[in-house]
Image (cartoon, rainbow, N blue to C red; front, side, top):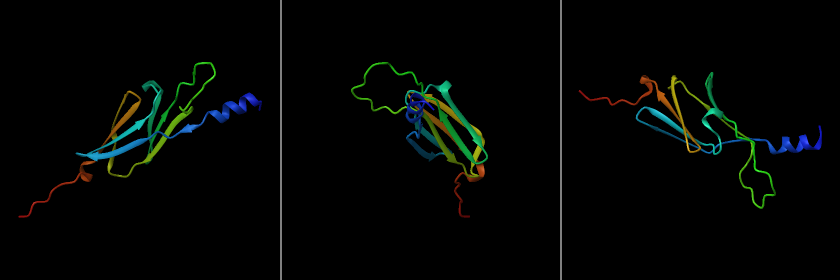
Length: 118
């Protein structure tokens, strides 16, 4: 492997996006921060009991000497383990301003319900 290829391999890495997960009204919302990733460069899939989110970051960087460069380079990936309460057929996704929002619905049997006393 040439030095150039090794340098490129070292720079390219998998980034774990920052996220928040909340539950309300029978829905679980996951928000993932993936700046620089367009909606066409995001892959979302469910395999067995895992929700897998991948985002390909555009590798084109302006040429020149950087004085400061704090933005990481690489592709995003995050895996969530789903339990049996999530309806795998009803998952929604929206990408806006570098934030991917996933909406997962709880199965009816998993939603909280109030029991009245007779």
